[in-house]
Amino acid sequence: MTDTPESITTVMSRGGRAANSRREITIIDTTLRDAHQSLWATRMRTEHIVQMAADFDLVGFGQVDLVAPIQFDVAVRYLKEDPWERVRLAHEHAPNSKFRALIRSKNIAAFDFLADDVIEAWVESLFANGFRVIGSFDGLNDVDNIAPGLIRAKELGASTFGAVSFCESPVHTDELFVAKAIELIEKADVDAIMLKDAGGLLTPDRIRTLVPALKEVIGDRSLEIHSHCLTGLAPLVYLEAVELGADALHTSIAPMANGAAQPSTQDIVSDLRALGYTVNVDDERIESISGQLAEIARVENKPVGHPVAYNGLHFMHQLPGGMLSNFHSQLATAGLSHRFTELLHEVARVRAELAFPIMITPFAQFVGTQAVMNVISGERYALVPNEIKKYALGYYGELLGPIAPEVLEKIIANGSSSIPLVSAPIAPMLPALRKRHPDESIDLLLLRAMFAGTQVDEMKKTVASGGNPDEIYGPILDLVKTLSAKSATGTQTLTAGDLRIRIEKGQSEDVA
Image (tube, rainbow, N blue to C red; front, side, top):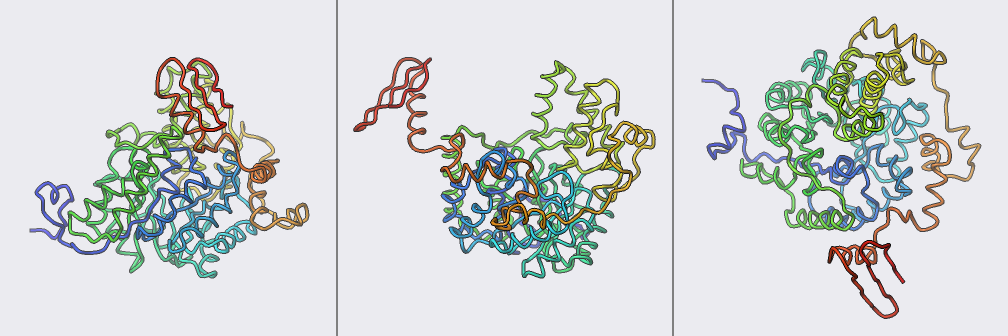
């Protein structure tokens, strides 16, 4: 006999219940943050969030993940929306929801590190704008990069979580992840540990060793599991994690689930209840949100998530889903589409040579760009981006292993000579920004610290003029699209009072 818990597959295949049944499992919703980041290129707009806010407020989620740096980036650069106003409106329309914010190391939405005064002010603005749950992650799991922000958040009164970022490599052992969790607790006294699997790389076998090891050292702190469905394994990983003691699961509401996003809330909740666990969420409210998401996708022709088949190649290159399509485009432009598989192998090779960085922002972009340059130029490391040289020199934190000596030599020789071999301290940024923009709020100054040139000014101008017409869909446009879809040829006409809409297939739309 053995005391080892039965696997979830064994329990479910015979219709049995888990031995530790009736324990309550917390659901942390990712629909408003990571789901549309994964499936819609982060193009969910403020109006979408506001229209669903009342339902979210009554579902009963433990927390609702609302923003990470990319939500600010896309809002400013593409949607031309004020991301801080989005945050305020979400809190206003869902006052009972516990929204959470995620910080990316010391670079937030930029690639290079920002000054410490910006990081501290960013945490303070998150709190001032309503967030009472604030967490942080670092792509190198360098806790020294994120501890100061977490400490400041806790000083302000926020609950904090520290992310242990997962990937597969010879250096990313269970022992390493356990050590990082202990370090987060000792240096920042975080309230929860988030096992963050941005690449969807966790497997049932790995979770069976990793969750017990983490639970043993984190005490009564909550252990959250966050993964993506890129290999099709995440739903099973979630159920195995719960069986082994995980406290909270990150899910998104279908149709904004599966694919590159998180497992479906509806499916995971159903499975947990079938196993005897308590999950206190309102199914009707979830279905209401699901219907609204489906309608937004229909009206705006946005994709929805679908379950994917297991893909073993993913474990080799470990690229986030969005980067794969970019690689196809880059190689096609260079007339090298036939070398796509070669590129994936080059990504894996570069990553190994660079001491196995985790393939999440910004390091996935660094490794991917270097691999593309190696393939297109025909000579490996003949061209070296600035970010690769900075990474190799430790600008972004302590590496988990040595870089291959011959590769490091090429990087230093062929990288920009303007990059010093030793990084210098970053001078405070806010005094100069306040001097240039004396009438602006700290929220806007923080955006200016991250977005170069006129991007913030363009966002402000668009907001003042009523919004970005390329990203606004209303009932008139929806009606035009519906008419256009009615027939493949011919003319469709609708008259309502003084308004006449005529669609002639093959010609431009005429609205008069």
